[in-house]
Image 1 (tube, rainbow over the protein chains, first blue to last red):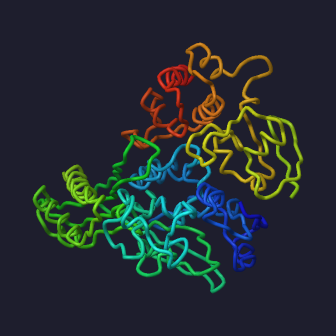
Image 2 (tube, one colour):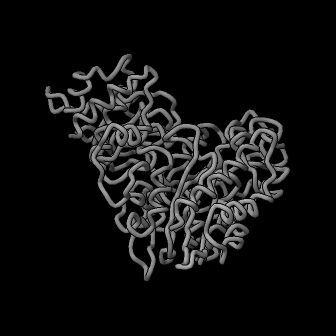
Length: 323
Length: 162
């Protein structure tokens, strides 16, 4: 591990004031410390923001304000989250392990890097890690990589479960930085790779996530489901956060669908949602909606299984949510 | 950098390089070799300790970031000569073979029993479910045992949870 300077920030303004080129903010460290050990991340200056006074979950109007330093385990166990946003609680609880959830922060969960095997291996080229060096995943091991929204430069996926639920809940991410404060609506925090895969998010240098605001819970039934290679402590092959509100006459009043494990960002299924609004809730319309979304999928040779997996997950989850 | 930790009830002040993990500090500097280094990537759980009462992977924790924290390792679980109930149950149920993962299993189980709340497999998230074998398996998924002693590990933990 390359040597670095370490400082504990006193408050968000202090953290931002300390930022200079080569600085990284340290949350729980569950991803960053590992990447430093692997040589993937080489900060010169680590500003510890894990103990900032941003560790509270509190009501905010009709919604909830979640501080960026709230531990994942505290978010998943919070009574208001369990009661009002069970989809978010389930997403958080299905990520990582008990130990890692105790350490990992909400801000760090959002900003964790892809687990693409080539990104994590400094002996291999990777456009995300070393721009212009190439993407061995396209002709290599991409069985768990993207089927939607990827580019010829990068086929990485975003690994977070929590972010998928936040994307479906229209959460807003509050950040502060050298240019002041701003609010970024999910799923807009994460970007698609395009020809700049090194940038996972729209954050500018020095910007620090301070909170996530959840608007009032959407009406209807909700669910988070995760398909993975083993029953626990594994990243999603495909996951879904879905909300479905069906009117008394059996037609879909409102729905929200976001997929995880399929793209460089949590994938909000706007085409499927549009196809469903006003349609009669049922297997036929759910299948049509899934097909409308997945028509834009461009699977790679060894991850084509993710497309029917995503289709089946959408249809089965919506069937569970339908009255 | 100089940091001060409370380790198994004893105040320790040490000078550390920022690169040193809590695990390496415990093992190499403080002589507490109970916490084990398995993968050094947070995937196996052999390094699990309690930081301010909560289980964490000591390999992923930078020692400097723990300044002021209270650390409990497997060496600190017993009450003098009296084994912790989990240690007694592990012996009673033969919950190990080679023993390498055991310190992490014990610290993880101790932290887990104090956590409560639902898990990813709990049907009703509003409830604090009973710790069945299935719930224990889910909650202990951050601790691997390459000998495959899981059935007896689960039995031991479920017994203590009752």
